[in-house]
Length: 253
View 1 (cartoon, rainbow, N blue to C red):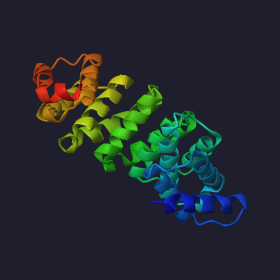
View 2: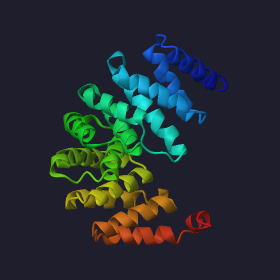
View 3: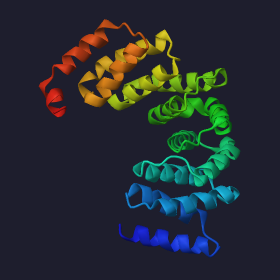
View 4: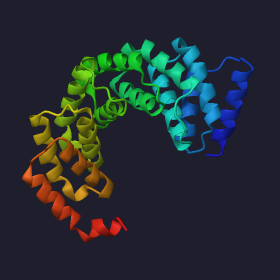
């Protein structure tokens, strides 16, 4: 949509002139910039900085949207942290108790991508994860576990949150796709926090869906299985059959 960059430029001008802007408008434009691949980093930085400095004007969903948008656009530029990311992190930490499960997962993922999931936001994320753990959807639980793994949150104070997110994901494995299986088990293996019951559940579910695994997800699954010393013969037999599939091998060329 060619109107998105124009709207972003107009909003940036309003912010530069210190004019009043509508939180919903800022959130919508930020999300649209990231989703359309037309996002300019300097616009997202400006929007995130404004939100971070006036977070009490914004709803939790706005914080989630802007954090996600900034992470998406900065990752395309292979850039990490920034002052704007730090302000978003502070806002998310302050407002953590208001975040819905989807927002908790999105913000955690975004802050991890932005190298801004430091000790304080991580603690806030852990607390809120435990509070709303039963409400997470599978993808949200995966994103949370990925965020914890990305920052190597192996300290005991995060174990309850990791266990809660893991249990949430295991309950929903039948509805998970191959990538969810691979990402979830990769994160748990990286964190070193997978119990035997969880491993067995992942193994059985992955076997049922082995035909859905592509080269990347299959590689991640087998790495995680080796990392956790998973000794499930059925899983490795199923993976061997999948690896011999001409359709899979041709996609690797």
